Image (tube, rainbow, N blue to C red; front, side, top):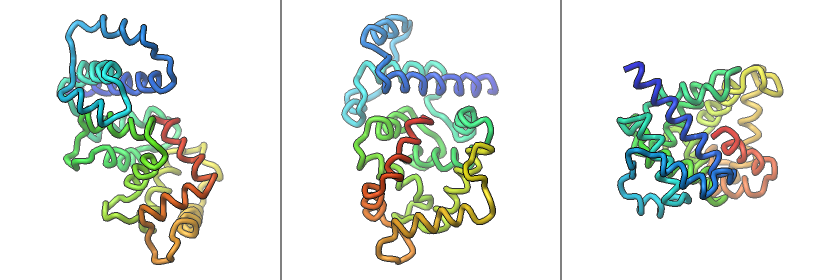
Length: 225
């Protein structure tokens, strides 16, 4: 069981590396063809045409990503524990467990405690190649922890603390007792236009589009995924 979990972690890391190469353009057509030829077993995700329609990846890209996912994770799913171990490797100087928990839930759209290939690829397609509106909507749903359609102060405080924990000793400014609350207060001053104590999707999207700093922060997902 432990060996299977280890192979699954390695497989998803390979998947993320492939995605980074796809996005950067370093995975060329020739390389795609070479990798497809190296496949001894043809791994073809179910509903390939549907996945191509739902994402911004080509059929060939999806086949390569699926091969890496399925070869290393024969069960076809990634659970939260494995996801946390994978994500922690990107932030060795901090504790990424809580943020990874929220990120896992955002990918786990069916709320069944596991991420299938479709969940993972659809989410990453949005973050890496989606429109600005799609990225903002995805981020909003990440922050909307209880999925009630609003971001409240408690949710934002949990997200901010999770980010500080994840960044660890490289957090700037250094974390003090009132720093998370200051960030939450600033967030709501900019986002909560009607001052009702919660932020709606439209408030979030409009405020982000009007704020250059927030727009730059959207690149964080691309840097860590």
